[in-house]
Amino acid sequence: MDFLDFRLRKGVVGLVTGAGAIYLLYKALKAGMSNRSSCSTSSPVCIARLAIERDRHGKDSGELRRLLNSLENKQDEYSKGMILHSITRCVYLLEAEASTCNFEDIRLVGSLLDDKDNSVKIQALNALKAFSGIRKFRLKIQEHSIKVLELISTVWDSELHIAGLRLLNGLPLPDFAHPQLRRVMPSLMEILQTDSILAQVQAVRLLSHLAQKNDLLYDILNCQVHSNFLNLFQSTQPGSLLFEVLVFAERLSEGRSSPHYRAVNWQYNEQSLHEALFGDESRLADRLLALVIHPEEEVQIQACKVIVSLQCPQDFSNRPSSCHETNSYFNEGDAS
Image (cartoon, rainbow, N blue to C red; front, side, top):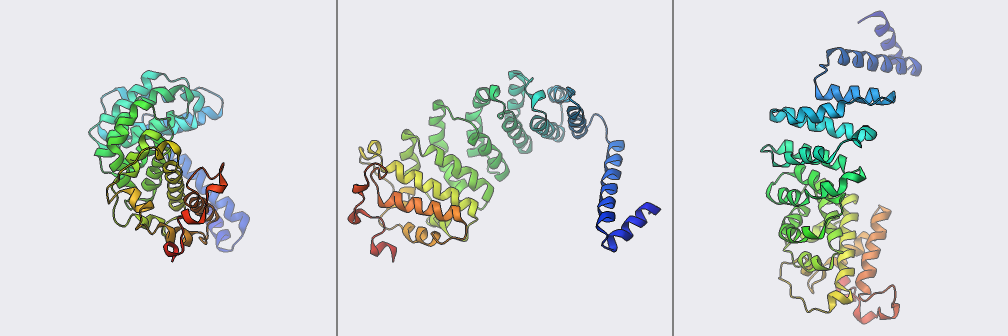
C-alpha cells in the first residue's frame, strides 16, 4: 500500500468525510486506469467503452459499425453473446450513431434468434429491444414478432421469456400475428402462473393489451388456468405484479361486459380463466376487498376500479343507472 493509500484509509477510519470521498475517487480512477491498460481493443466491452468516450466528445466513433461487422464473421457462441450485449449497450448510449444503422443490420441481429444457444437468443432479443427505441426500425423489428412468440412458447427459460415479452410489449403487434397469439395463449397464461416475478409482470402486461382486442378476448377468457390462479391476487404478492394483475382483471371485466361481446352466448370450460375470475364459485370478490387496504396506493386504487367494473357490468361510465344492487358482483353472500 503506498503512502497516499495509507493516509486516505486512515481518513476513512477516522470518519473524515472529505478524505473518504477522495479515497473512493482515487480507487475508482486507479481501477479505471488499470482496466483501460489491460483492455484489448478488440474486446466487445472495450469497443463499447471507447465508443461512449468518443461520443462524449461529439465524435462518431464508428465502433457500433465495427461490432455489427464483427457479428457477420464466424464467432463462437460466447463471442456472439458478448458482441450482441455490447451492441445493445451502444444502441442505448449512442442513439445518434445507432440511427445511422440500416435494415440489413436489424436483419442480421434478428437472424440470431435462430441460434442454437439460448443465451445468444436472449442477447439478440435485448439488442432488438434496444433498436426498437428508434422509430424507423420498429416496423422492421415487428416482422420478427412471430418468431419471438414461437420462442416464448417453445423454450422454457425465464430469462428468454422476460427478454421476448419486453420486446413484444414495446411493439404494436400486427393483425397478422393474431393467429399465432391464439396458439401461444396457453403458454402466456402458464408464464403468468410461474414464480418468476419479472416474467409474470411482462406476461400479464401483454395479456392486458391483448384483452382489448375483440377477436382475442374469448381465447383469453377460455384459457385454462391452475386451480390456485387467484393466489395472484393475494396481498403477499409484490405490488408491481398485483397492480398489473388488477389492470388485467379490469380489462377483462370491461371487455366481457361490452355490447359486442355480450351479443354472443359464449361457453367456457370449467378450468377457464373466466370461471376463475367471474364464475359462480369464484372468490375474486374476497381478494379484491382485501386489496382495498393494501399498503401501496396504486394497488388500492386499481382494486377499487376492478370492483366498480364488476358492480356495473354495462357501460357504467355512460349509464350509471344500470348499476343496480341486484346485479352487483358483491352481494352479501359473495363478500362474506
